[in-house]
Image (cartoon, rainbow, N blue to C red; front, side, top):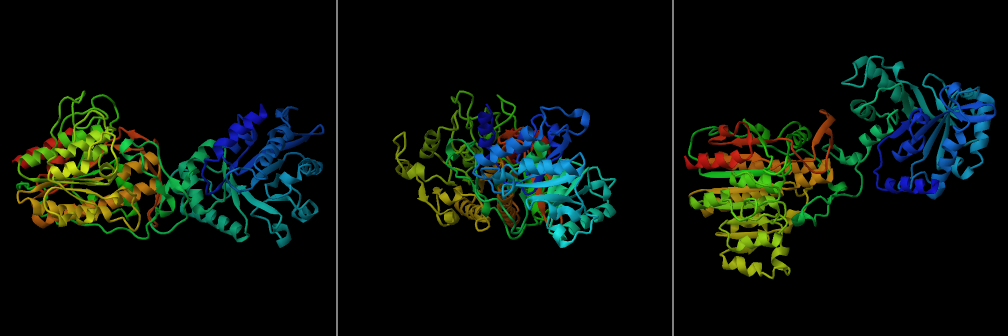
Length: 639
């Protein structure tokens, strides 16, 4: 039974990310499963209060709590021996950190300390080497006696002591009550300056000794954990191992800051994407860094909110972009985004007909058609028998040019709702067949496989689109060099944004605007999708969300620049849904550091923002269902 339990506990740990601090399971013996609960949460330091009572080393806080069954050997020594030997001499299979066993002596120092040393010394491969660091606290011997004990025994230090270099060498950590330095702070908000100064000075002093510091009697919670981490506390005391571990777990995917910083190596990805995007390989964590903030564009506001006739409409959709995705991007960029400079701001709900939470198909269809939709449906009624005309159809009927640009697969839901009509978003071959009869002038995104590899339906799509009057290219930045109907499949668009490619969508947006403006003197409609804000949410990868958001904002800036250049263009920026339930927990305005977590790896019902600019932009203020965006666009253009 014990071997089975050990295997179950060890298996998931290999999947856990490294934590940026050591978590100390304070008074660990009071847990439901002492040792195992803290160990399973990767607490790097575990505490046991030990009495020498009637010749036995027993664990408990008070003498009246002691029972023969709660022996130090059974509760801590044997489990530690098991895991270290099972992992080839390491406490954990997936990392090289030592485990700290903090033994608090509750009886007189001697003979209890000698009894502890005798017991642990029976397992030299575990406690006398690099696997486990034994630290003695409580009734510790005087510093002058440290050297009389075995070299593998360390002692808990006190900031008030004046250690000699030889004595300091035997100090494993320095632990003091937090209330020695800060009596008022309860873990909420900011510490008052005198207390903050005292805590900082204590940390600096211990670090000058070359030792880690731990505060006991310290507050816990989100703000406390982040504050202690930011101040440089090495070992964070916790009575809630699961809560503290969850906070620090996968730390690299919860934090972002402009500038080079330590990141966790590897790939963060998801299996929650749909058929068209399932091949996405994930975000390479080391590349999710930016060395500088992005430039933003301040509109002229010359024609903003006017009643001028609208010639062009540019609809930018940040897939999965809730208000917190926007604000996180703004915080990273010194509270500055082009879209946040727009004065007409609204909120839209996106609940579909058949569920509480929408997806890109239902949300995108509502944005494209102005009709309520069903999950997984692409601009059609419930059984797919009726096609709902999209904005591309509406503008085409007015003699205007139309374009669909997406950083997601071209057959994925958001771009598909503007040129296809079907009841199942995963039917990608059926979706792309709509290109054989499509009137959309520009379709641009990743997806060369639909044209260049054998298809399940046997259709030669490349020949078919050419018969439909389309040219075919693979360079999205050069679409402005081709007149007439064009399909561009540029697989570079399927990659996530990096420092080198951050302005890629902006460049494509600019080129697409130029093409459509040249193709039709009557005006145009263009939809641009920033797809991978959604991918980041499904992957619980906050740094990717920030970078994708900033890349999307650069595309918004290009749309605003064009709108200011002619005064006849309406720009609408919104989302099809929110992904991940992103919550911004903390940060630092001076450095631009943001700490945020996803509460889900799926879509949520959280409302999403709408930003509008240009003639008629004030019509998008307020709160409404997503279908009102397409309806309002049609009404304004028709005026």
